[in-house]
Structure formats: structure tokens, C-alpha cells
Image: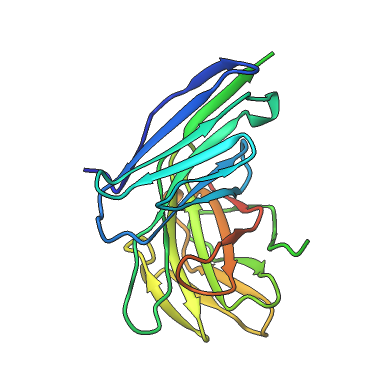
Length: 115
Length: 114
């Protein structure tokens, strides 16, 4: 099983659609979870952290199910500017001593929002 | 808004040559990272650095790679003898703390090895 696995996509949706991204992770000891977005040939940028209680930021809702090792991202009322690759990212810590965390990325799901 | 900067934006080199990629992390951050992304593939962790030493490194980060924080502001990645397969986008990142703290990524250096 891959460490972080995402829907392969791509997704093509009209403006205003609701889009759902799914992700699973293999390490049950994983500690923190994120969704990043990456525009073509740019750096990953944090979209939101994901908490067990679920969290919402405007049109974006993220959920985590630790028992199923599953993370989701929902985008409502999608905009043209939402077109990007969405990366599921997991911090598989903890590590002992002075070590700090590394991020493990999924391959990403490309979203294109069409006018 | 503070940001991570990287230079150069694009580096072209011949196979076997040494390259140094430079990063200036956010000034009050304490943890520094290098990641790479081969075209069309996922972002992969290379190395993390804290308190002037490597905290963790991946299997990709072999003896050809080294990192340094030479002057308290720059953070560099050196590849001693580049291979064709080193062609990738290299991202520097920094974070204030460890644990769940957000890592901020620089815009990347595109390395092309001919």
C-alpha cells in the first residue's frame, strides 16, 4: 500500500460545482494531516490543516477519519481560480529526540474548473 | 508577508558537475527542509535540518548530497556530481517549530542536468 494515495483524477468540473477529493494513508501512527494546492510548476501552498473534528474554511471542508485512515477535502461552489493540483500531505511522525517532522505527499489530483 | 526565497530559479548543468542551490528561509524559523519533485511525479522529502545538523534524511539523500547553513541566513543544498536523474524541481521549506507546524515552501529551483 502506498504511503499516501489519492484519487488519480483528473477532475473537470463546471464553475459552481461541488468537488470531493479523497486520500488514504498507510501509517496509523501519522500525526498531522494537510491539504496543499500546487499550481502548475509552482511550489506547494498550504490550503488547510485537517483535524479529527473536521474543519471548514469558507468553501473548503476537510475531514479526517483516523479509524479508516482516510482524509477528504470538499470544495463547494468551485471557482475558476480553484483550478490546481490538490495534494494530500501527511506528517508521519513522531520521531524521537531532536528529530523534526517530514511531510509525505500524495501524487496529487488535478482539478480544472471550466467556465 | 515573510516568504522563503530560492536562487537560482533555473540551473542548467552538465552531468558530473557540482551545483549549489540556495535558499533563504523565513527569518525566525528554526527548521529547514529540502524536497524535490521530478516532472510529473510527487514531491519527495530529501532532508531536514535543525540546530546546524541534519535531523533526518531520505534514501535519496546519498553521499552526493550535502546541506549547509553557512552564515545564519542561507541554507544550501549541494550536489557534488550531478546525474541525469537529478533533474527535478528542488523546493526549500522552513518551519518555526516541529510537530504539526506548517512548512512554508520556496518557489523552487528547476535543475536540468544535460
